[in-house]
Length: 402
Image 1 (cartoon, one colour):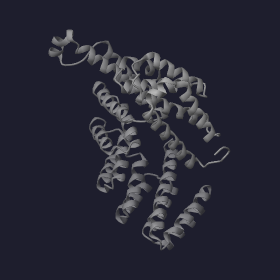
Image 2: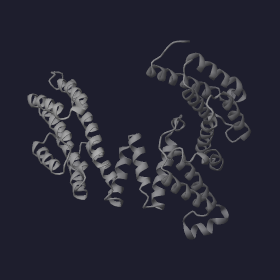
Image 3: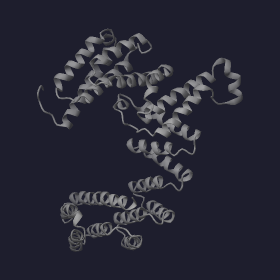
């Protein structure tokens, strides 16, 4: 494989296969690996460099992080900090990037968290709280669990019976961490180290702390916002619906959350629910063209002519850009299989919007597939058309609102 040029997809697949090979070796030979760390990591590096000579420094370091987590997750020496120091020293010597310590510290911290060593996990994770929401919530969780352990110790049982809740400095630190996350607004699922081996435990911690944070700070919309981002990323429909239901009660006039509800209803093929959201948005934001566009888009997807004409009339009254209305007319004609009218409208769009001539040409190519006898090709054309027009119209509305 030396010198061989691989496509990204093939290289990714082969890299994962190599990773699984090392995982299997670690599981079968954990004690042997622990006793010969330099030899083991030397073998990892040699195999990786020979198999993928053009691998990027980032991917190289992420591979080492994954193998390291598996090594720590399998080892019986995880409570031995001399052993952990040896692992860290061996790994840091091998990694390529200047900030190599960040990845290994996160990996070690996550392993300690998974094993229930919350105090030591904090030593490795707390400085990276704002790199990713899942790291931040993991740090807050460590503080919170430590507050519970402190509160329910033998000498605190009587007070526990009276109050039935944790407290003290550790809970305060947990609350402060969650509030800091809401203020800093870090991304979520942005670090490769979060995907290593078994992310389920970290996912559970994330949701526990998001809902606890919202209980502590009920006016902070960030907890719902970051939860929705994670639910969409992980395709967690149940949690997404739960968050949207909360937002509908606690932030009923929030435009952003209502948009998310509209998108969710569309994805769920709940036309009636989406129509309800559109009506509410138009009432609450009568001067904003975006809710009217949502109505146009919904009418296109349901191909209801009466509804489409009503929203088109409203769009003109609200001063919607002509380019948006013309594109929606093209799309509606194509969805209705009125090919002649659609092609005439495309020609008119190109004449009226010379600045978007490039887009008219693209629409012609997509429209040609609507005339095909191949049903699969027609379905793909419909999706491409709606997605394309949606992107164009959304950008035009942004310009108008600026």
